[in-house]
Image (cartoon, rainbow, N blue to C red):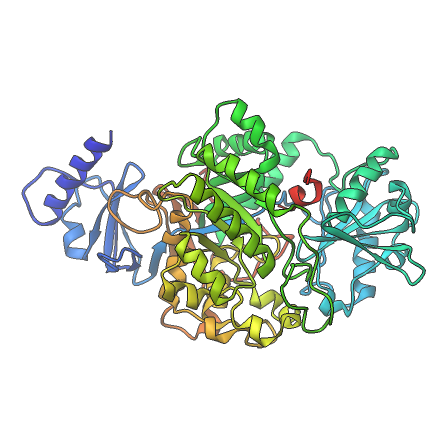
Amino acid sequence: MVRRFGCFLATIALAACGASLAYAANTIFINANVITVDPAHPAAQAFAFEYGRFIAVGTNAQILKLKGPSSQVIDLHGMTVTPGFNDAHLHPQAIFDENSPYYRVWLGADKVKTMDELVAALKRKAGITPPAGTINGYGYNDVTLGRHPNRHDLDKVSTTEPVMITHGSGHITVVNSYVLNEAGITKDTTDPPGGAFDRDPDGTPNGVLREAARGVLERGRRDHGGNGSDRQKMPHDVELQGYMNCFKQYSAKGLTSVGVAGGSPTSFRLFQELRDEGNPVRVGLMIYSQYYDQIAAAGIERGFGNDRLRITAIKNFQGNSLSGRTAWLSEAYSDRPGYFGIPPARSQEQLDADFQKWWDAGWQVATHSNGDREIDMVLTAIERCEAKNPRPDARWRIEHASVMNQSLLDRARKDNVILVFHSYMWEYGNILQSYGPERLAMMHAYRTAIDMGIHVAGHSDSPISAADPLLRIQDMVTRKSQQGLVVGGNQRVSVDEALKVWTLDGAYATFEENIKGSITPGKLADFVVLQKDPRKIPPDTIKDIVVEATYLGGDKVYTAPPKSVAMIPQPPLNYGDGDYGDGDEWENEHAPW
């Protein structure tokens, strides 16, 4: 099949060069500003595709030679085309209308700026929550609020029903007194390895649970006969529709591929159903490490699946949260003398053994790690694996890799590690000031890593930050927060570099750079039509560019509504206005170590 398609492309190339061959392309786009992200041919005016793949890229004159009586020719009138965007690491959420009983209240800084507003939003949620359901919300910003909410705040929502919310980092949970009592958590409950309970002056847990302390809560609720979960059960068809809503929103922002950063065999079956129902986004699923033995017993190997859905890596955690300020550091937090974050629960010896097992079985390993002391442990485990069992083109991944220094970057380059950096200064620039200027200068070190030749990839970690590639690209180019604060400005990159990170580099991170990530003959026809060229407008306005259309395998899966205006999506997302085609933290809470 590959050889036949290669011969087919050779035939097309001859036709485009003027040879007299009886061939007509199915679909041709002309008068476009094509940013191909193909270093051999970085720009073009036109392209054609057939059977879901690009077959020719070039000038208008060259590509129009492939026009036949049945060819569809689309004139883009100068609009910009890029490869489809690839978010290398995110966490899909089932999305529902605010009046749905399954809706989780969005508490981000764009919606909730005071503690009174937070309580009021949760009270509204309480009004539509069925009996025995959890009143839940997510995404609060403690810097905007002035502090973390606690059980005393959430008790104002209810003292007779469970109330549970999560921080914007996804690594801190806050509950009311009802939930603490249900879980049997008291003054005598000790902090678990890798976690901590915030406490009132008398030592009683105040409802703020950091990292592994959340697992203590869930086990306690289950052991004491409670719900044991903050996820309300829902009918399967409702859940399926909620996830489809989410993936349609990704498509509306120009995403054609995403890396789901943690799932189970059950998750894979869900994504299979979504694929069969016309999911407009390609999915690469990282399997949580606690399911490794299960998938190994079934004979599943890396790459299982197809170009619409495949298993890509083993996802594990060695460390904590950057924006939640629990990441383990070698030097104390700038605003908290003597506080170095929360050490990982897993020892170096345990980490080495786990890595060796997955590595020897041929898996790519993707490890969540933020603090420099955490990253040092991960690189040490990688180096020990390589020494025992060298393997070419391993493509180890460190997810987030936030607090870096030159020594860690040198080791990452030597070990051929892919650094999957954040670009969320827009949302969290104010929170990150607690790391101090020296660390901020090497945080999410895109400029330094690219200059060193280290492979990088971009991600939103949605819903931690918005799954909006153009906002994320603006963030990489400007390093500015919503308040205009520049954070680590020395790590800025160009628009062209950021586009590559969000397209071709994302494909490289999953061993798929030969089938997607650039507008190149032979690759999947995944592309985005933008109303403006992000290279030719003020950098602070890149986020405002309207995605005119998104194509997956040559099929239009999203069309912008008339007079569309770009909006930064934060959950809950509005998914009803466009025209659509038919087209991680759980493990850290529950890990055995």
